[in-house]
Image 1 (cartoon, rainbow, N blue to C red):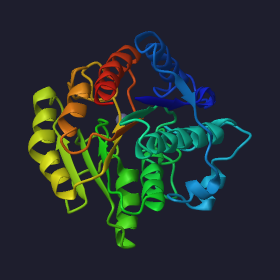
Image 2: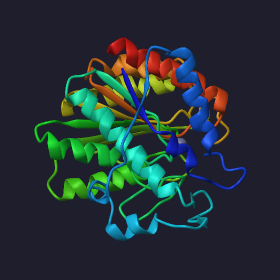
Image 3: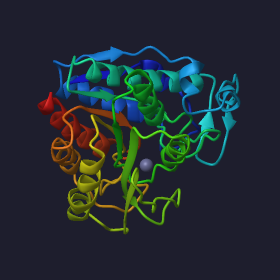
Length: 299
Ligand SMILES: [Zn+2]
């Protein structure tokens, strides 16, 4: 397993009291250095605007470049280092995919912030500026045209931005990216019910736990994924479905984040995980520990 990141991602500043803050990045970095001492944290290069345009308009990209402190909405803030942090986040995800597709490793983790799955073509929202996972998927199908990519989103929130970007890609005739999500229904962003050949949503009721999560993956997502037959899986890896997370009401265990890696290894052993949410620092670190251990075992 390879781990891609860059310390500049901690420089994306948000107002005091925001759940998505640099402490999340530091907590995961510390956990990896302690628990996985043999795996180095590799520095990723930032991407340029031409890569960001795989998902976003130039107007949106330019609006993320600022010398000031700006609130985009109640959840989403910009600071002078935000654009650079987000460009490194996308760069880490792309480098992680390249490690796997070039055969250097079966699995990789991109330790990233800000998160990405709520960002759509022209809109930053829900802590997200650029849609890191979707840009990584589009970059794969651009560079490896015969490769099919499944985005598996297990963040407690639905990836509305990813789904919207995928729908545009499908409308343009694309067939090599699919999206599956298990999330809590009735919370932000309020989407996450569609199902078709390329999109499979599994909304869970508040209070759902490990058994519901695992049943959704086993009986809904895996048959969908078998039909699509991806060559690589990209996780939108949010750890905010954990029972101790303050933002939502699902009751996943730490072990669920390892279980999904093993469960989906029957679909593809090439797996790249990209950090999304997770807001209880202790639960985030322990959940990510289990997830990374399973990814390392696949390598
Ligand atoms: Zn989330």
